[in-house]
Length: 110
Length: 116
Image (cartoon, rainbow over all chains, first blue to last red; front, side, top):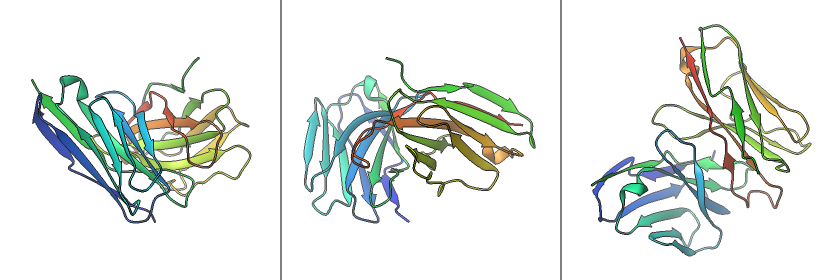
């Protein structure tokens, strides 16, 4: 079945440093979504990428979808303490459900 | 409007007992998903309902797990003869109708299940 790997599992950064999490799928995806889960909270949708090579920005967050539609990344510029949480990618292929990556837990040190 | 709601928010049960978890999706959302999230882990897909279609049960880990949905509204996830490894947060998500998987999922707050 479809597998989605995400690295790193944990990342500690100083406030103001950049952060990147990477997502790789074993199969070609029709789209990929990114979610953020704050500590003790539930996942909240951030964005969806559909097109090969697509790049989308949300303020300090930049999302990319690979040319082969098998990988994606989320980059945060100049992290803030409000960025703390776990970031999940979730890919959709031929099946109807999303396959979630294991997540990257981001800690921002003030 | 109201978001996805789940009840109870916390459930402590003894090993071997049955539990029933409830999810109320956003009105009009035809797709409903159940996930399991163990402590510090990612989301594990359990089951997916889409309208009147047969549910996708491919993620259910054993025959102790079952789920039902009444039309396009409430869903219940039942775990029979609970085991300690069932301890986790059970998340429900709903999605509006659309072309397959092209819409975001809205998650409920989850039910934290602890099996003692």
